[in-house]
Image 1 (spheres, rainbow, N blue to C red):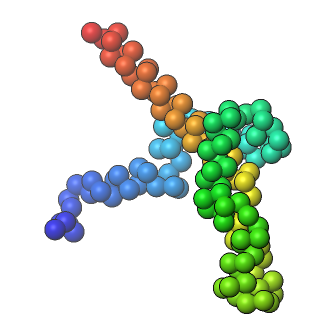
Image 2: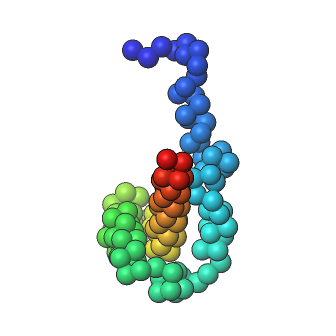
Length: 134
């Protein structure tokens, strides 16, 4: 059983370190994440899809989108909404509340790739620093 009176507060410190609101901790792991995120929001979906993404990234983003959004089928989503809310579902909810745009997943995959690249670069720098000190 966990001791609720942790004098060192180790779990709390870890939680604070990785908390969403703690931008300084995240920035040290992947600098320029906010700037990169802003850039992604400004460019068109076509630029995201065909210029900034590799084919593998695009396919991965689309697979995630399909997995989360009724296989990418609006008709399946509408059928589900009709089953859930009845034939008057449009008066209770909107299709956009239940199906996200694929662009969201393009941005997500690019942000994840950005973080991965920074993590690798940081690891390589630390390895070089360790080799230089020996």
